[in-house]
Length: 198
Image (cartoon, rainbow, N blue to C red; front, side):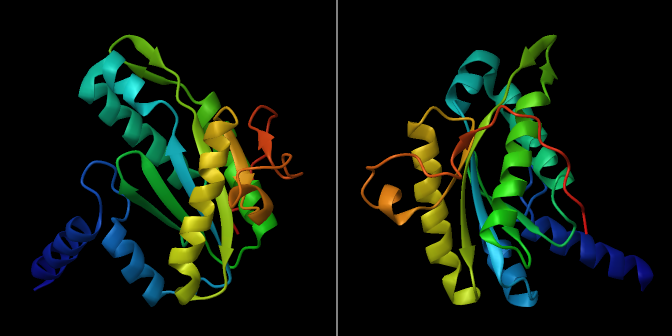
């Protein structure tokens, strides 16, 4: 019976996690949100910069290694009960439990720095990976889709501004794509200290 129990757990994990990265799938992301009390939370949307160039230069095996490397970095720099999911391709969504916008920006900035500084060795070559991040907040489950959309808008502003940086959603900038850079918008270059896992 114990063997059956563990086999069932393994099958459930395989069904709810992305086969390549081991992260939650889009579907299991929503299931997990319904099961856990994470609110209020910060929502972070991350996208690997120039991922097509990595695939073109190193093949799909290199691209897969980059996705796995990226995913591991995200998980290792988030808390155990935060949710990290692969939404498709090179786009990822992170929900940081009981977090404010400021908390989300701190974590995203740390992730941005970790990814930039942690080189991937593949086939005797070094693959340099960077990512862009958008951050917003959600107060309850009904806010999640809207919050992901707002973080996505901030992410695309980060892409337009040069990539490898973290932007918080700002309605004056992201809804009109105009105006000056907000005070929280900063390229990911300065060293960031590790935040507590508590």
